[in-house]
Length: 253
Ligand code: ADP
Ligand code: MG
Picture 1 (cartoon, rainbow, N blue to C red):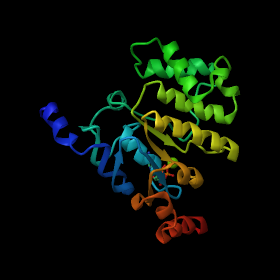
Picture 2 (tube, rainbow, N blue to C red):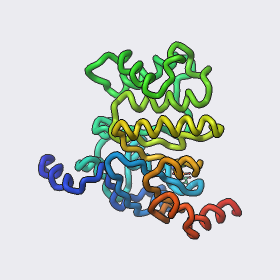
Picture 3 (cartoon, helix red, strand yellow):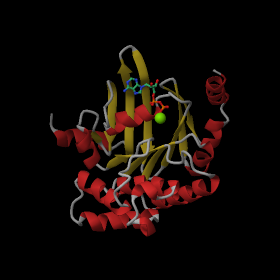
């Protein structure tokens, strides 16, 4: 296959990310079932749905971390990435954070980001300069010498974002970035995410805090039992009777 031709053939779509009919099977169980979604350049796409709907798995399939899809295609900026190893996908300009806190608690905040930079193969500027610029961007420079395990929850969330930003991605995928935050901290996080979007970043955000998606997302999708249940503006999607039923149904179960 000629990679240049392949690149050219997908480029006309204009979407930064195109997920085409991806599935992930675990034994007899389909965690993600034939999901297709397109993400425009510069938009924030919100992803919601009941627990176990396949949201985090969809992030796995797109980022290749820790695994890709068992069926379907993922096209990022005109290149097919679903068959690439995860480190190559990252180099295309796509980063994700994880739902669980992922940091080195005894290392300083600054060293956490420097480690991420080194691991991601940051080039050009030194790891330290890149780390400080990422900390500046998310607004946690004042904690730079503090062990990451000792900083407030909001700062930890921002540290995870900084560790992803240090690779200068074009698409940032956040898995429940607001989990556990109070209203004031959520508002602060919303401001940061909006700033990142203004700076040209495209964002995919999985979130249970629907008010955050209502405020931030240009469009939303809802997953339920591995399938795409709804897609549209936050207001339309969050008032869709099918969506309400999927949430209430799970809550009542
Ligand atoms: P969500 O993030 O929407 O809460 P997940 O994507 O984490 O849901 O999980 C979707 C479903 O896939 C769940 O039923 C989960 O148990 C299952 N699942 C996820 N990862 C694995 C795995 N590595 N092996 C087996 N089952 C998995
Ligand atoms: Mg999840």
